[in-house]
Structure formats: structure tokens, C-alpha cells
Length: 351
Image 1 (cartoon, rainbow, N blue to C red):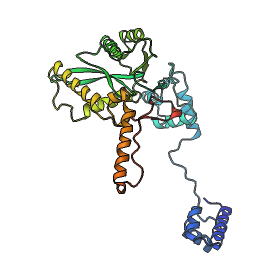
Image 2 (image 1 turned 90 degrees about the horizontal axis):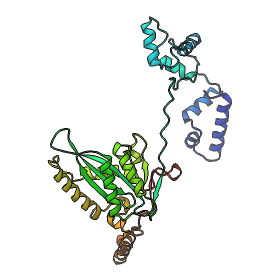
Image 3 (image 1 turned 90 degrees about the vertical axis):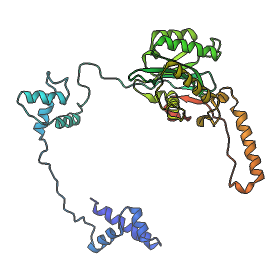
Image 4 (image 1 turned 135 degrees about the vertical axis):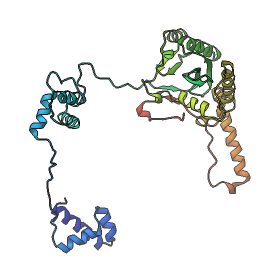
């Protein structure tokens, strides 16, 4: 309710504003009251609130004794490690009804006892993975495995795919009938050889989720021998590996994706080969300024952007009436972050 002194102050301020030329509706809106309310206050010639006040007590509200009884029962040795969902059924089996399960939860919460009650240590929150910034190619890679459907129900081929997050170039891929860390390690060796990465260069980072092929002993040993730094997502958090997830969306969501399952491993490998050629050499990626991943990987994007700016400037000089403002600023993409720290924002670069 509005106190009498607050009502009087509001009416005085509104009257002062109106005397100085303000509209009554605007002054009332600024104070957060309606014009009809101000008129009613003035007609009553007083600032008292005439509304009746009734304190309503729910009929089913627990008494303090009942609430204390819930706390005492929940803290007995036999129930101290159990949640209300376990306590209430056990009491019912003994022919005792104290309160509903929801009342147990509300009461425990009010007494700050609604937390981990078991003897085991509570689950620790998953710590966000360390962020990595790619200022050029061959610095940060991301990889994952996706299923390829076959004509045999329940049987799949497995596509191993590695990409450079700076350029979005697919740097390595293979299709196999099984998921194994050994096959992943062999793919990594071939990809590093193709990209001419050796121990004389700064250690590249390879990010993945927590699947068994990613964390298998053979894969980790291969990474160590090659000088590759492992990086892993949080358990059950796909957002920590966004570049691979986005690539799989492009792979399976585009018009090139076949309408029918793959009949053989050879057919699947041929299709993936054609996709990789198109993606790396023809696809204009929106997140890197609509250049191809290979152009970005070879650091040709700056020259391409400069050529586009010259072209647009020439077009504007020929027909200036078609341009209401500046030309499109074709600029190369900057650094790319994988899981940037919170201080830098959720997303510094498009996926």
C-alpha cells in the first residue's frame, strides 16, 4: 500500500509540474500513477488508503511444531543421508504421515538443509575448458567423429574429421567401420605430415570431446610424440566443441547430403572426398568473410578483401546515385577463439 505521506508528496510534485506547463498525463506517467488515481485522491480530500487489509493464512499451512518435526525426522541418523523422495515413502510404509514430499522439500530449503545429504562427496561443477586463441593457421585444431548411416539398420560408418579453427579448413579425414583410438592416432599423424607440422614449430592444440577414441591411450601417446597439446570439452557439453559441430551441420544439412544411406564403405569415402574438396576449395564460409577455407588457410584473404573493396569503390564512382552511404567494408576476419574466457564475451567469432 502507498503511505499517506508518499501520496501527498506525489500530488505536490504533480501539481508543481502542471503549474510549470507540463501535461497532467505525462506527469502522472512519470510518477507511475494514473490520472484517475490522482483525481480520486483529491476528491477524497485526504491521503489515507481506504483499502481493507486482511492477513490471509492458508488453511493447509504447516505449524511451527510440524515444521520442526520435519527437520527433526530428516536429521535422524536413518534419514540424514536421504532426500525427501526417499524419506516420505519409508514413513508411509511404517504407517506414518508427517507431511507431503513437497512440504519436506520446502521446509528443508527454509532451514538451509536442502543440499547434498549423502555420505559421498557432492558432484563438483564442471570447470570450463581452457580457452585457446588462433592467430593463424596450424595453431588450434578441432576434431570429432560422426555417424554415417548404412543400408543395414543399426550399422554405421564412422567419419573422423579434423579442421583448423582459424581457417575452417578440413586438414584430415577418414571413414572407418569402427571407432578406435588407434585409427584416430593414425589420422593425426597423416594430418600433421600433410600440414608440415613438426616439433620445431609452436605446439599446436587439438580439441575434442570426451569420447573413448579421443582419450584412448594410443591417441594420447601419438599426440605426445608429435608435440600436440590435448584439449577436451566438459562432459556432456557440446558447446565446448562448436567448430566440429558446425561442420557436421554443414555436412549433413546441405543439399549435397545423399537421400539414401551408404551401401558400402567405398561409396561413403568417395562421397566424403567430394564434400571435402567442395568445402575446402569452393565453399565461401560466412564466418571468415566469405572466402574459401583454403584461401584463408593460405592467408590469401587479405588480398581478396582488398580487391573486393577496390571493385566496390569503382562501382560506386560509376553510379554514385545507387549508393546511399559507404561501400561495404570487406575486411579479413581476425583472431579466432575456442572457448574464450568470460571476460572476452561468449562469442568473439562466428562458427
